Image 1 (spheres, rainbow, N blue to C red):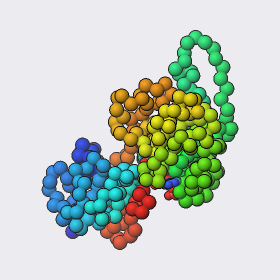
Image 2 (cartoon, rainbow, N blue to C red; image 1 turned 60 degrees about the horizontal axis):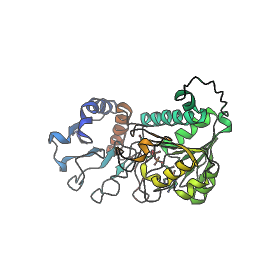
Image 3 (tube, rainbow, N blue to C red; image 1 turned 180 degrees about the vertical axis):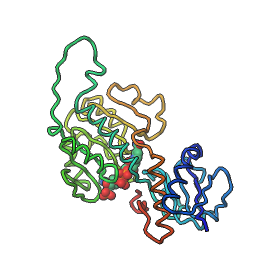
Length: 314
Ligand SMILES: NC(=O)c1ccc[n+]([C@@H]2O[C@H](COP(=O)([O-])OP(=O)(O)OC[C@H]3O[C@@H](n4cnc5c(N)ncnc54)[C@H](OP(=O)(O)O)[C@@H]3O)[C@@H](O)[C@H]2O)c1
């Protein structure tokens, strides 16, 4: 009997993802009947696994009575984890492509601020202005969130030589990284943070992690890089801190409202860089392999990978 898998993610992604999924199922030795939600060929009560993303037409999971798991294509699951109709296990996306993309984006933006690249790239005015940035080992960088993506970024920044600290809910022990945890840990770690990267999930506990009080702890002229989620930062407090020079620059990839409205002050602020939620995207080949592996596990009675925890919200 084939396993019935419903692709109920963003409909426009189906064309690109169908073949990589079929290849991954074949490689994993799975006999799968794969259908797209928009084709209407698979009845809800026949679905064994659902591939899902926030743009899905499926927001009521009640009819999917035999569905063994909902497999998210997104790493962040805040838009579905609180859905009361979702009683099935929810697996979030943790994949190599997402991780590599995030590491590249974060390291690129850290390097931009560390080396003061804007002065040369934007300031070609005929004036010879020598500038000697410190070496990475003399630059304190902090990653808030040491999960799949945060720990990968922290490790790569450490490999560049940066003096890296990290903060998480539970205490971590990562080679070469000074680890902090809990509310006290946040206060301590921010005091030493010249560049802060936010890679926390969006939960009630993480909302406004950076606010007027926590921003004031950072050394004057610090940099903020947020590829995590918009609500992690109190926007008004950040704008105030940018206007006083407490924060020198913020590079923001994620926002409370996306796309960021054209009238938002971030667009015109000279010390803000807006990027369009592009830090890391789920890659077709590697994400299809993760989905296939989870279906293989489900069919063999093994534990699913990357299960989201409804009690913590991530
Ligand atoms: N911009 C983009 O393109 C893009 C792409 C992918 C993902 N993202 C964002 O990146 C986030 C992180 O992804 P991930 O895969 O690394 O998530 P993850 O593996 O779940 O890691 C989350 C980290 O945050 C920590 N954390 C959670 N709540 C906390 C709290 N209250 N206080 C302190 N630390 C807390 C966790 O601590 P513990 O280790 O103790 O659990 C963990 O270290 C996603 O949730 C998503 O919002 C953005």
